[in-house]
Structure formats: C-alpha cells, structure tokens
Length: 334
Image (cartoon, rainbow, N blue to C red):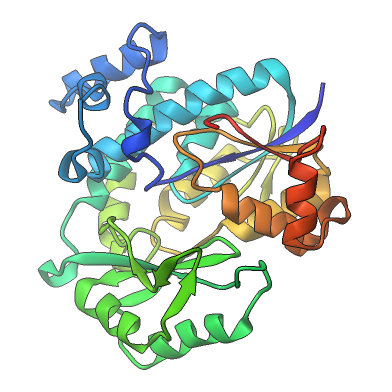
C-alpha cells in the first residue's frame, strides 16, 4: 500500500464540472441535508443536481464551501481504502475538511464549522465595501519561478492602503484579496502575463476576501458562535498554511482550535509551505488530490518540481514520470 499525502482543495474548487457529485443516500450527505434544513438553508443535493451551473448560486460561499467539504470528504473515504495516509495538507478552506478527515472534529461539528465560516464570508466588509480577488502567476510556462512577478505584487500592494493583501500562496500562483476598488488598483499595476493561453492578472469569481485582515471582525464573530465544538487530536499529521505540524501524539486540541478559528481566516494561507513540509518531512510515495475538480493539480505539480522531489526538476521530467507506471500525483476526479 502506497504512502500518501492528501491535499484538500479549498473555496473556488466546486465548478460546473462538479455538478452531480453528491450521492443523496450517503449518510454524510443525508446528515448535511438535515443540518442545512435546521439552519434554514437550501438543500445541497438540489443545488448539486441542478441541470446547469449558476454562479450566483453555486459559487455563493454558503453553498460552495459545504459542497466542496462534502465532495472532498467523500473522496477521502475512498483514498483511505487504497492508501496509507501519512500526512494531510489543505488549501484555504480545505483545512476545515482536513479536520473532519483526520478525526479532529466529528462530522456535525466540522459541518457546522465550514457552514458558519461560509456565512461569515458573505457578511459585508468594513464600511460596506464589496470584496474581490485576483490571481497572478509566479512561474512561466516551463514552471520556472519568476521573482519579478512576486515583486510586482508586493510593489502594487505597497502603493495603496490596507484594503488589499496577499491571501493565498500556491507556489505557482498568488491570490490577492481585498475590497473591489483596491483589487482593481492592484490589477492595474501588474504587468499583463499570458500563461496557458490565459491573460493575467485574472479576476476570480469569489468576492469573500477571506484570509485578509478585512475578515477579522466577521471571522471573530463566527468563532464565538462555534465555541461549543468538541476538538480532539488528529489521527494523522496535519500541516497548516504556516508549515506547522499537528501530530497525533503531540497536538494540543485547544491550540489547534485557536489557530483554526482565530488564526487563519484573517491571515494569508500558504498552501505551498504546507506541501513543502509534507514532502520534506514525510516523503510520501504519492500526493492524492480529492475533488471537487482538480484545482490543486498544477500547483502541486509545480511544487514537486520546485522541490526536486523524486529528482524531478523540470516540467518535462514531471510529465514523463506522470505518464509512466508510477505517477506521483493522483487525482480522484480525473
């Protein structure tokens, strides 16, 4: 049985291709439906089974985040049957799924956590401002890091106020979040880049400005509402966006709760750092990507190459290895 690192995707990963992902008869799905009904929220099964993808519905945080949570958790169940999971990492709100998958929180508590944080992400920003996000590449088509691009982001942020900041670090991409006006200002100052046939900076559909200081107030209020959650030690090592490890034998559940509820919602989340630690410290045979979608595929592939993991030091070498008998990156949705 191969030793696996599991990387859970976060917000923005549930897309049109994810429709029809939820098996309505599964106990977790049925329980989620009960919890949603009790909270006066619409059925996730009905949203997931829609004939067409409607961004105003499917990308709304209070729907998209729990949809992502359920899809990922269902995939994690299958992963555990086929692999020895030795370490778990996550991108952004995928951290909430990681807590459920590793036994830190029971299903009900984990679902309450992701739902409450999603509702907090829909609250108005300070002064009633609208949120926005953009993504910008930090590497070229050959997956070589271009330091000038990261410097350009920092320079654009330095010319404004505190209404925008780096929210998510993926290694090959950076996500900037903030108010709509601030993000537009940052975008206007970034050099246009063509990558994979797309033009960047690229405005994202999300508008929650999660992982920025603008979310401090709403995240704190959500944390207050979640004070009754029952926290435990994980049954497998978790690595967060700071590169900090929470192990089965040394984790302080209170510290883990504090970091989850009050530490990461209003601070940048560095997925790249978390995966680097997982690769260096646990040397997995494979990195497995739960759904929905394959949003972390490119980021994980480029981080593997940047690390020289398994002596793969270029895009060509990685793609050759992937096409061979022992690929290192496995996607549950491909």
